[in-house]
Image (tube, rainbow, N blue to C red):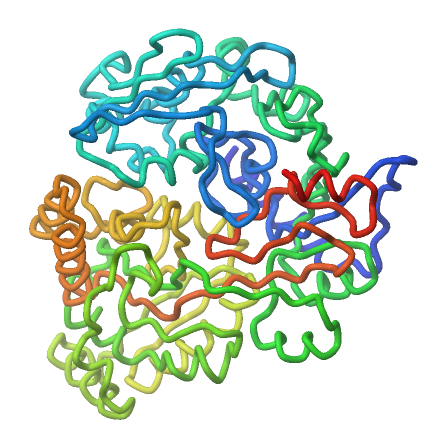
Length: 542
Protein backbone atom coordinates (compact mmCIF):
# COMPACT_ATOMS: atom_id res chain seq x y z
CA UNK A 1 0.00 0.00 0.00
CA UNK A 2 2.81 2.44 0.86
CA UNK A 3 4.61 1.69 -2.42
CA UNK A 4 1.38 2.19 -4.39
CA UNK A 5 0.77 5.55 -2.67
CA UNK A 6 4.30 6.73 -3.37
CA UNK A 7 4.05 5.73 -7.03
CA UNK A 8 0.76 7.62 -7.33
CA UNK A 9 2.38 10.68 -5.77
CA UNK A 10 5.28 10.51 -8.21
CA UNK A 11 2.97 10.14 -11.22
CA UNK A 12 0.72 12.95 -10.07
CA UNK A 13 3.67 15.30 -9.56
CA UNK A 14 5.00 14.42 -13.02
CA UNK A 15 1.66 15.19 -14.64
CA UNK A 16 1.39 18.46 -12.71
CA UNK A 17 4.93 19.51 -13.69
CA UNK A 18 4.13 19.02 -17.38
CA UNK A 19 1.14 21.33 -17.39
CA UNK A 20 1.30 24.71 -19.08
CA UNK A 21 -0.96 27.56 -18.07
CA UNK A 22 -3.01 26.59 -15.04
CA UNK A 23 -6.50 27.73 -14.08
CA UNK A 24 -7.16 28.31 -10.40
CA UNK A 25 -10.47 28.11 -8.54
CA UNK A 26 -12.35 31.40 -8.56
CA UNK A 27 -12.38 33.26 -5.26
CA UNK A 28 -15.88 33.83 -3.87
CA UNK A 29 -16.99 37.45 -3.99
CA UNK A 30 -15.86 39.42 -0.96
CA UNK A 31 -13.35 36.76 0.11
CA UNK A 32 -9.54 36.79 0.18
CA UNK A 33 -7.92 33.73 -1.41
CA UNK A 34 -4.21 32.88 -1.76
CA UNK A 35 -2.53 30.24 -3.91
CA UNK A 36 0.76 28.90 -2.57
CA UNK A 37 3.39 26.74 -4.30
CA UNK A 38 4.52 24.14 -1.78
CA UNK A 39 7.19 22.09 -3.68
CA UNK A 40 5.78 18.62 -2.87
CA UNK A 41 2.49 16.94 -2.10
CA UNK A 42 2.19 15.98 1.57
CA UNK A 43 2.37 12.31 2.49
CA UNK A 44 0.13 12.89 5.50
CA UNK A 45 -1.68 15.72 7.29
CA UNK A 46 -1.14 13.96 10.63
CA UNK A 47 1.61 15.83 12.53
CA UNK A 48 2.84 12.55 14.01
CA UNK A 49 3.34 11.06 10.53
CA UNK A 50 4.86 14.08 8.79
CA UNK A 51 8.52 15.07 8.43
CA UNK A 52 8.90 17.37 5.40
CA UNK A 53 9.03 21.16 5.32
CA UNK A 54 6.23 21.04 2.71
CA UNK A 55 4.04 19.21 5.24
CA UNK A 56 5.05 21.55 8.04
CA UNK A 57 3.84 24.57 6.04
CA UNK A 58 0.38 23.01 5.83
CA UNK A 59 0.32 21.97 9.47
CA UNK A 60 1.45 25.44 10.53
CA UNK A 61 -1.87 26.79 9.19
CA UNK A 62 -4.05 24.14 10.79
CA UNK A 63 -2.64 23.27 14.20
CA UNK A 64 -1.11 25.24 17.06
CA UNK A 65 0.92 23.88 19.94
CA UNK A 66 1.65 25.25 23.38
CA UNK A 67 3.59 27.99 21.63
CA UNK A 68 3.34 29.22 18.05
CA UNK A 69 5.29 31.27 15.49
CA UNK A 70 4.96 34.98 15.12
CA UNK A 71 5.36 36.54 11.67
CA UNK A 72 9.16 36.45 12.08
CA UNK A 73 9.27 32.78 13.11
CA UNK A 74 9.88 33.45 16.80
CA UNK A 75 8.02 31.60 19.58
CA UNK A 76 5.07 33.36 21.19
CA UNK A 77 2.26 31.99 23.37
CA UNK A 78 0.01 29.56 21.53
CA UNK A 79 -2.60 27.41 23.19
CA UNK A 80 -0.63 28.14 26.37
CA UNK A 81 -1.09 31.76 27.47
CA UNK A 82 1.77 31.48 29.95
CA UNK A 83 4.07 28.95 31.62
CA UNK A 84 6.25 28.45 34.67
CA UNK A 85 9.47 26.51 35.15
CA UNK A 86 10.76 24.95 38.38
CA UNK A 87 14.15 26.17 39.70
CA UNK A 88 15.88 22.97 38.48
CA UNK A 89 14.37 23.34 35.00
CA UNK A 90 12.80 19.88 35.13
CA UNK A 91 9.12 20.71 35.63
CA UNK A 92 7.17 23.01 33.35
CA UNK A 93 3.58 24.05 34.04
CA UNK A 94 1.62 25.35 31.07
CA UNK A 95 -1.60 27.37 31.52
CA UNK A 96 -3.92 27.02 28.52
CA UNK A 97 -6.24 29.63 27.06
CA UNK A 98 -9.88 28.96 26.21
CA UNK A 99 -9.57 27.33 22.80
CA UNK A 100 -11.72 25.08 20.62
CA UNK A 101 -11.29 22.52 17.90
CA UNK A 102 -12.93 23.45 14.59
CA UNK A 103 -15.88 21.16 15.44
CA UNK A 104 -16.57 23.11 18.64
CA UNK A 105 -15.04 20.66 21.15
CA UNK A 106 -12.79 22.41 23.73
CA UNK A 107 -9.01 21.98 23.47
CA UNK A 108 -7.85 20.67 26.84
CA UNK A 109 -4.70 19.57 28.62
CA UNK A 110 -5.87 15.99 28.01
CA UNK A 111 -5.43 16.56 24.27
CA UNK A 112 -1.76 17.36 24.86
CA UNK A 113 -1.25 14.40 27.20
CA UNK A 114 -2.89 12.13 24.62
CA UNK A 115 -0.81 13.60 21.77
CA UNK A 116 2.57 13.43 23.49
CA UNK A 117 1.88 9.79 24.37
CA UNK A 118 0.63 8.98 20.87
CA UNK A 119 3.67 10.22 18.95
CA UNK A 120 5.91 8.09 21.16
CA UNK A 121 3.96 4.83 20.94
CA UNK A 122 5.69 2.12 18.86
CA UNK A 123 2.38 1.52 17.06
CA UNK A 124 2.37 5.12 15.81
CA UNK A 125 5.85 4.57 14.30
CA UNK A 126 6.55 8.29 14.12
CA UNK A 127 9.91 9.06 12.45
CA UNK A 128 10.15 12.06 14.77
CA UNK A 129 9.53 10.29 18.10
CA UNK A 130 13.12 10.71 19.31
CA UNK A 131 12.78 14.50 19.22
CA UNK A 132 10.64 14.17 22.36
CA UNK A 133 13.14 12.07 24.30
CA UNK A 134 13.77 15.07 26.56
CA UNK A 135 10.38 14.33 28.16
CA UNK A 136 10.61 12.19 31.30
CA UNK A 137 10.31 8.53 30.38
CA UNK A 138 9.83 9.21 26.66
CA UNK A 139 12.53 6.90 25.32
CA UNK A 140 11.31 3.95 27.37
CA UNK A 141 7.75 4.48 26.11
CA UNK A 142 8.96 4.80 22.51
CA UNK A 143 10.98 1.59 22.76
CA UNK A 144 8.03 -0.31 24.23
CA UNK A 145 9.76 -0.76 27.59
CA UNK A 146 7.28 1.25 29.64
CA UNK A 147 3.53 1.99 29.49
CA UNK A 148 2.41 5.29 27.98
CA UNK A 149 1.06 6.35 31.39
CA UNK A 150 4.63 6.54 32.70
CA UNK A 151 5.41 9.50 30.43
CA UNK A 152 6.08 12.63 32.46
CA UNK A 153 3.02 14.59 31.31
CA UNK A 154 -0.28 14.98 33.11
CA UNK A 155 -3.32 17.23 33.14
CA UNK A 156 -3.68 19.08 36.46
CA UNK A 157 -7.02 20.37 35.21
CA UNK A 158 -8.75 20.99 31.88
CA UNK A 159 -6.48 23.95 31.20
CA UNK A 160 -3.31 23.17 33.18
CA UNK A 161 -0.62 20.87 31.80
CA UNK A 162 2.38 19.64 33.76
CA UNK A 163 5.43 18.38 31.83
CA UNK A 164 8.43 16.76 33.53
CA UNK A 165 11.75 16.50 31.69
CA UNK A 166 14.71 14.15 31.72
CA UNK A 167 17.09 17.11 31.74
CA UNK A 168 16.82 20.91 31.58
CA UNK A 169 15.72 22.11 28.13
CA UNK A 170 15.80 25.89 27.87
CA UNK A 171 14.77 25.49 24.22
CA UNK A 172 11.41 23.94 25.22
CA UNK A 173 9.35 27.01 24.12
CA UNK A 174 11.11 26.83 20.72
CA UNK A 175 10.40 23.12 20.35
CA UNK A 176 6.83 23.46 21.67
CA UNK A 177 5.85 25.22 18.42
CA UNK A 178 7.14 22.34 16.28
CA UNK A 179 4.73 19.88 14.64
CA UNK A 180 5.90 17.01 16.86
CA UNK A 181 4.34 18.79 19.84
CA UNK A 182 1.11 19.83 18.15
CA UNK A 183 -2.02 18.50 19.79
CA UNK A 184 -4.25 16.15 17.84
CA UNK A 185 -7.99 15.97 18.63
CA UNK A 186 -8.25 13.12 21.12
CA UNK A 187 -11.98 12.68 20.52
CA UNK A 188 -11.48 12.22 16.77
CA UNK A 189 -8.40 10.00 16.93
CA UNK A 190 -10.07 7.69 19.44
CA UNK A 191 -13.11 7.45 17.16
CA UNK A 192 -11.42 7.16 13.73
CA UNK A 193 -7.80 6.12 14.38
CA UNK A 194 -5.36 7.25 11.69
CA UNK A 195 -8.31 8.06 9.42
CA UNK A 196 -8.97 11.18 11.51
CA UNK A 197 -6.50 13.03 9.23
CA UNK A 198 -8.58 12.50 6.07
CA UNK A 199 -9.90 15.88 4.83
CA UNK A 200 -13.54 14.97 5.49
CA UNK A 201 -12.73 14.31 9.17
CA UNK A 202 -9.88 16.75 9.76
CA UNK A 203 -10.33 18.81 12.89
CA UNK A 204 -7.96 21.68 13.63
CA UNK A 205 -7.35 24.19 16.41
CA UNK A 206 -5.53 26.77 14.28
CA UNK A 207 -6.56 29.62 11.99
CA UNK A 208 -7.56 27.29 9.12
CA UNK A 209 -9.04 23.85 8.57
CA UNK A 210 -8.61 21.35 5.73
CA UNK A 211 -11.66 20.85 3.52
CA UNK A 212 -10.25 18.93 0.54
CA UNK A 213 -7.11 17.30 -0.84
CA UNK A 214 -6.84 16.38 -4.52
CA UNK A 215 -3.70 14.28 -4.82
CA UNK A 216 -1.20 15.85 -7.18
CA UNK A 217 -3.33 18.98 -7.53
CA UNK A 218 -3.95 20.92 -4.34
CA UNK A 219 -4.92 20.95 -0.67
CA UNK A 220 -7.64 23.47 0.17
CA UNK A 221 -7.98 25.17 3.56
CA UNK A 222 -10.66 27.57 4.74
CA UNK A 223 -10.65 30.00 7.63
CA UNK A 224 -11.60 28.46 10.97
CA UNK A 225 -14.17 30.73 12.65
CA UNK A 226 -13.60 29.02 16.01
CA UNK A 227 -9.91 30.02 16.13
CA UNK A 228 -9.45 32.33 19.13
CA UNK A 229 -7.85 35.06 17.00
CA UNK A 230 -9.99 34.60 13.87
CA UNK A 231 -10.92 38.31 13.76
CA UNK A 232 -7.31 39.13 12.86
CA UNK A 233 -7.01 36.54 10.07
CA UNK A 234 -7.37 38.19 6.65
CA UNK A 235 -7.28 35.19 4.30
CA UNK A 236 -10.47 33.17 3.82
CA UNK A 237 -9.24 30.36 1.54
CA UNK A 238 -5.77 28.87 1.05
CA UNK A 239 -4.71 26.54 -1.76
CA UNK A 240 -1.42 24.61 -1.52
CA UNK A 241 -0.02 23.17 -4.77
CA UNK A 242 2.86 20.70 -5.36
CA UNK A 243 5.45 22.59 -7.44
CA UNK A 244 8.58 20.48 -7.69
CA UNK A 245 9.14 21.99 -11.16
CA UNK A 246 10.41 25.39 -10.01
CA UNK A 247 10.72 26.84 -13.52
CA UNK A 248 7.03 26.15 -14.16
CA UNK A 249 6.22 27.62 -10.74
CA UNK A 250 8.14 30.80 -11.64
CA UNK A 251 5.90 31.28 -14.64
CA UNK A 252 2.78 30.66 -12.59
CA UNK A 253 3.85 33.29 -10.04
CA UNK A 254 4.65 35.75 -12.83
CA UNK A 255 1.24 35.16 -14.45
CA UNK A 256 -0.53 35.59 -11.11
CA UNK A 257 -1.68 31.95 -10.92
CA UNK A 258 0.38 31.50 -7.75
CA UNK A 259 0.88 34.17 -5.10
CA UNK A 260 4.15 32.64 -3.99
CA UNK A 261 6.36 29.60 -4.39
CA UNK A 262 8.37 28.15 -1.51
CA UNK A 263 11.51 27.50 -3.55
CA UNK A 264 13.62 28.98 -6.33
CA UNK A 265 16.24 27.24 -8.43
CA UNK A 266 19.33 28.86 -6.94
CA UNK A 267 21.18 29.65 -10.14
CA UNK A 268 18.16 31.64 -11.40
CA UNK A 269 17.99 34.06 -8.47
CA UNK A 270 20.09 36.75 -10.13
CA UNK A 271 18.04 36.51 -13.34
CA UNK A 272 14.73 36.61 -11.47
CA UNK A 273 15.72 39.70 -9.49
CA UNK A 274 15.89 41.49 -12.85
CA UNK A 275 13.02 39.71 -14.60
CA UNK A 276 10.59 39.90 -11.67
CA UNK A 277 11.65 42.88 -9.53
CA UNK A 278 10.37 42.71 -5.97
CA UNK A 279 9.47 39.00 -6.07
CA UNK A 280 12.66 37.30 -4.84
CA UNK A 281 12.94 36.83 -1.07
CA UNK A 282 16.11 35.23 0.35
CA UNK A 283 17.38 35.03 3.91
CA UNK A 284 19.95 33.27 6.07
CA UNK A 285 18.60 29.83 6.98
CA UNK A 286 19.35 27.26 9.65
CA UNK A 287 19.76 24.37 7.22
CA UNK A 288 22.46 22.10 5.82
CA UNK A 289 22.62 19.84 2.76
CA UNK A 290 24.62 16.66 3.27
CA UNK A 291 25.28 13.13 2.07
CA UNK A 292 24.57 10.18 4.35
CA UNK A 293 26.46 6.90 3.96
CA UNK A 294 24.53 3.69 4.60
CA UNK A 295 26.65 1.62 6.98
CA UNK A 296 25.05 -1.61 5.78
CA UNK A 297 27.12 -1.12 2.59
CA UNK A 298 30.47 -2.86 3.30
CA UNK A 299 32.57 -0.11 1.70
CA UNK A 300 31.09 2.54 4.00
CA UNK A 301 32.11 0.70 7.15
CA UNK A 302 35.62 1.86 6.32
CA UNK A 303 36.20 5.40 7.57
CA UNK A 304 38.84 5.94 4.87
CA UNK A 305 36.24 5.50 2.14
CA UNK A 306 33.79 7.92 3.74
CA UNK A 307 36.59 10.41 4.35
CA UNK A 308 37.83 10.18 0.76
CA UNK A 309 34.36 10.79 -0.66
CA UNK A 310 33.83 13.80 1.59
CA UNK A 311 37.23 15.32 0.79
CA UNK A 312 36.70 14.98 -2.97
CA UNK A 313 33.58 17.20 -3.12
CA UNK A 314 34.29 20.66 -4.51
CA UNK A 315 32.05 22.58 -2.15
CA UNK A 316 33.33 25.99 -3.24
CA UNK A 317 32.32 25.30 -6.84
CA UNK A 318 28.91 23.98 -5.78
CA UNK A 319 28.04 26.93 -3.53
CA UNK A 320 29.68 29.83 -5.34
CA UNK A 321 29.69 28.87 -9.03
CA UNK A 322 26.86 26.37 -9.46
CA UNK A 323 24.13 27.45 -7.04
CA UNK A 324 25.03 31.14 -6.65
CA UNK A 325 22.08 31.81 -4.36
CA UNK A 326 23.99 32.84 -1.24
CA UNK A 327 24.69 29.29 -0.02
CA UNK A 328 27.99 28.72 1.84
CA UNK A 329 30.35 25.73 1.50
CA UNK A 330 29.79 23.38 4.46
CA UNK A 331 32.78 21.67 6.05
CA UNK A 332 30.98 21.33 9.39
CA UNK A 333 27.46 20.09 10.09
CA UNK A 334 25.84 22.75 12.29
CA UNK A 335 25.09 25.94 10.31
CA UNK A 336 26.51 29.29 11.40
CA UNK A 337 24.10 31.51 13.29
CA UNK A 338 22.69 28.87 15.64
CA UNK A 339 21.92 30.49 19.00
CA UNK A 340 24.63 30.19 21.66
CA UNK A 341 26.95 28.06 19.55
CA UNK A 342 30.20 28.95 17.82
CA UNK A 343 30.62 25.48 16.29
CA UNK A 344 33.38 22.95 15.76
CA UNK A 345 36.47 23.74 13.74
CA UNK A 346 36.45 22.57 10.15
CA UNK A 347 38.74 19.60 9.37
CA UNK A 348 42.32 20.52 8.55
CA UNK A 349 41.89 19.39 4.94
CA UNK A 350 39.15 21.94 4.38
CA UNK A 351 41.82 24.61 3.82
CA UNK A 352 43.84 22.53 1.35
CA UNK A 353 43.81 23.26 -2.39
CA UNK A 354 41.22 21.06 -4.09
CA UNK A 355 43.89 19.17 -6.06
CA UNK A 356 45.63 18.20 -2.81
CA UNK A 357 42.36 16.96 -1.38
CA UNK A 358 41.73 14.85 -4.48
CA UNK A 359 45.21 13.31 -4.21
CA UNK A 360 44.65 12.43 -0.57
CA UNK A 361 41.24 10.97 -1.40
CA UNK A 362 42.82 8.69 -4.02
CA UNK A 363 45.42 7.60 -1.46
CA UNK A 364 42.77 6.77 1.13
CA UNK A 365 40.74 4.79 -1.39
CA UNK A 366 43.86 2.86 -2.41
CA UNK A 367 44.54 2.04 1.25
CA UNK A 368 40.97 0.73 1.49
CA UNK A 369 41.54 -1.51 -1.53
CA UNK A 370 40.00 0.54 -4.33
CA UNK A 371 41.70 1.77 -7.49
CA UNK A 372 41.79 1.48 -11.31
CA UNK A 373 41.65 -2.33 -11.16
CA UNK A 374 38.91 -2.33 -8.53
CA UNK A 375 36.87 0.89 -8.76
CA UNK A 376 34.40 1.74 -6.03
CA UNK A 377 30.91 1.52 -7.55
CA UNK A 378 28.08 3.22 -5.68
CA UNK A 379 24.64 4.75 -6.16
CA UNK A 380 23.56 8.20 -5.02
CA UNK A 381 19.82 8.40 -4.38
CA UNK A 382 18.72 12.01 -4.57
CA UNK A 383 15.70 14.31 -4.52
CA UNK A 384 14.44 15.68 -7.82
CA UNK A 385 13.94 19.21 -6.50
CA UNK A 386 15.77 22.10 -8.15
CA UNK A 387 19.07 22.36 -6.28
CA UNK A 388 19.83 18.63 -5.86
CA UNK A 389 19.27 18.21 -9.60
CA UNK A 390 22.11 20.70 -10.11
CA UNK A 391 24.39 19.49 -7.34
CA UNK A 392 24.35 15.71 -7.69
CA UNK A 393 25.87 15.60 -11.21
CA UNK A 394 28.66 17.86 -9.92
CA UNK A 395 29.39 15.47 -7.05
CA UNK A 396 29.23 12.54 -9.46
CA UNK A 397 31.88 14.28 -11.60
CA UNK A 398 34.05 15.07 -8.54
CA UNK A 399 34.02 11.42 -7.52
CA UNK A 400 34.80 10.27 -11.04
CA UNK A 401 38.04 12.29 -10.77
CA UNK A 402 39.18 10.05 -7.89
CA UNK A 403 38.18 6.83 -9.65
CA UNK A 404 34.71 6.32 -8.16
CA UNK A 405 31.91 5.12 -10.41
CA UNK A 406 28.78 6.80 -8.99
CA UNK A 407 25.34 6.28 -10.52
CA UNK A 408 22.55 8.78 -9.89
CA UNK A 409 18.99 7.77 -9.07
CA UNK A 410 16.45 10.57 -8.64
CA UNK A 411 13.20 10.33 -6.68
CA UNK A 412 10.38 12.61 -5.64
CA UNK A 413 11.40 14.30 -2.38
CA UNK A 414 8.94 12.42 -0.14
CA UNK A 415 9.76 9.12 -1.87
CA UNK A 416 13.49 9.70 -1.40
CA UNK A 417 13.10 10.40 2.31
CA UNK A 418 10.89 7.35 2.78
CA UNK A 419 13.71 5.31 1.21
CA UNK A 420 16.31 6.89 3.50
CA UNK A 421 14.24 6.06 6.57
CA UNK A 422 13.88 2.48 5.33
CA UNK A 423 17.67 2.32 4.64
CA UNK A 424 16.95 1.71 0.96
CA UNK A 425 19.97 3.63 -0.33
CA UNK A 426 23.75 3.57 -0.55
CA UNK A 427 24.48 7.31 -0.53
CA UNK A 428 21.58 9.60 0.35
CA UNK A 429 21.26 13.22 -0.73
CA UNK A 430 19.60 14.72 2.33
CA UNK A 431 19.09 18.03 4.08
CA UNK A 432 18.16 19.13 7.54
CA UNK A 433 16.51 22.32 8.70
CA UNK A 434 16.45 23.21 12.39
CA UNK A 435 13.34 22.14 14.26
CA UNK A 436 14.36 24.64 16.96
CA UNK A 437 17.20 27.14 17.17
CA UNK A 438 19.79 25.07 18.99
CA UNK A 439 22.81 23.00 17.91
CA UNK A 440 21.18 19.91 19.40
CA UNK A 441 18.52 20.11 16.69
CA UNK A 442 21.26 19.08 14.24
CA UNK A 443 23.57 16.94 16.35
CA UNK A 444 20.85 14.66 17.71
CA UNK A 445 20.49 13.23 14.18
CA UNK A 446 23.61 11.11 14.68
CA UNK A 447 22.71 9.86 18.15
CA UNK A 448 22.45 6.08 18.21
CA UNK A 449 18.95 6.32 19.77
CA UNK A 450 17.56 8.67 17.12
CA UNK A 451 16.24 5.89 14.92
CA UNK A 452 14.85 6.40 11.41
CA UNK A 453 16.29 9.86 10.81
CA UNK A 454 19.84 8.75 11.63
CA UNK A 455 19.88 7.57 8.02
CA UNK A 456 23.35 6.01 8.06
CA UNK A 457 22.88 4.34 11.47
CA UNK A 458 25.97 6.09 12.85
CA UNK A 459 26.95 4.90 16.31
CA UNK A 460 29.73 6.22 18.54
CA UNK A 461 29.47 5.80 22.35
CA UNK A 462 31.69 8.82 23.00
CA UNK A 463 29.49 10.98 20.77
CA UNK A 464 26.37 9.81 22.62
CA UNK A 465 28.00 10.52 25.97
CA UNK A 466 28.97 14.08 24.99
CA UNK A 467 25.40 14.85 23.93
CA UNK A 468 24.15 13.41 27.22
CA UNK A 469 26.60 15.61 29.12
CA UNK A 470 25.42 18.63 27.13
CA UNK A 471 21.80 17.84 27.99
CA UNK A 472 22.57 17.85 31.69
CA UNK A 473 24.93 20.83 31.74
CA UNK A 474 23.35 24.03 33.17
CA UNK A 475 26.22 26.32 32.15
CA UNK A 476 25.64 27.51 28.57
CA UNK A 477 29.32 27.93 27.69
CA UNK A 478 30.28 24.49 28.99
CA UNK A 479 27.29 22.96 27.20
CA UNK A 480 28.40 24.57 23.94
CA UNK A 481 31.89 23.06 24.37
CA UNK A 482 30.43 19.57 24.80
CA UNK A 483 28.38 20.04 21.64
CA UNK A 484 31.37 21.33 19.67
CA UNK A 485 33.45 18.34 20.75
CA UNK A 486 30.65 16.01 19.66
CA UNK A 487 30.49 17.72 16.27
CA UNK A 488 34.27 17.38 15.92
CA UNK A 489 33.98 13.62 16.49
CA UNK A 490 31.25 13.15 13.90
CA UNK A 491 33.33 15.11 11.37
CA UNK A 492 36.47 13.08 12.10
CA UNK A 493 34.45 9.89 11.66
CA UNK A 494 33.07 11.28 8.35
CA UNK A 495 29.68 9.95 9.42
CA UNK A 496 28.13 12.33 6.88
CA UNK A 497 29.51 14.65 4.22
CA UNK A 498 28.11 18.18 4.65
CA UNK A 499 28.04 19.99 1.31
CA UNK A 500 26.55 23.48 1.71
CA UNK A 501 24.61 25.63 4.15
CA UNK A 502 21.19 26.75 3.03
CA UNK A 503 19.57 30.07 2.37
CA UNK A 504 15.80 30.13 2.25
CA UNK A 505 14.44 31.17 -1.15
CA UNK A 506 10.90 32.23 -1.86
CA UNK A 507 9.22 33.86 -4.83
CA UNK A 508 6.54 36.16 -3.40
CA UNK A 509 4.16 38.36 -5.37
CA UNK A 510 4.44 42.04 -4.40
CA UNK A 511 0.66 42.09 -3.95
CA UNK A 512 1.07 39.94 -0.80
CA UNK A 513 1.37 41.85 2.48
CA UNK A 514 2.56 40.54 5.84
CA UNK A 515 5.41 38.41 4.48
CA UNK A 516 8.57 38.63 6.62
CA UNK A 517 11.76 36.81 5.64
CA UNK A 518 13.22 35.06 8.67
CA UNK A 519 15.82 32.60 9.91
CA UNK A 520 13.49 29.57 10.11
CA UNK A 521 11.48 30.29 6.94
CA UNK A 522 8.12 29.99 8.71
CA UNK A 523 5.37 32.13 7.21
CA UNK A 524 1.95 31.29 8.67
CA UNK A 525 -0.82 32.34 6.29
CA UNK A 526 -2.68 33.94 9.20
CA UNK A 527 -0.27 36.90 8.94
CA UNK A 528 -0.67 37.35 5.16
CA UNK A 529 -3.15 39.51 3.25
CA UNK A 530 -3.44 41.43 -0.03
CA UNK A 531 -1.97 44.91 -0.14
CA UNK A 532 -4.65 47.56 -0.04
CA UNK A 533 -7.35 45.17 1.17
CA UNK A 534 -9.47 46.56 4.04
CA UNK A 535 -8.54 43.59 6.23
CA UNK A 536 -4.76 44.07 5.74
CA UNK A 537 -4.49 46.33 8.79
CA UNK A 538 -6.15 43.68 10.99
CA UNK A 539 -3.70 41.00 9.79
CA UNK A 540 -0.76 43.34 10.42
CA UNK A 541 -2.00 43.95 13.96
CA UNK A 542 -1.96 40.19 14.57
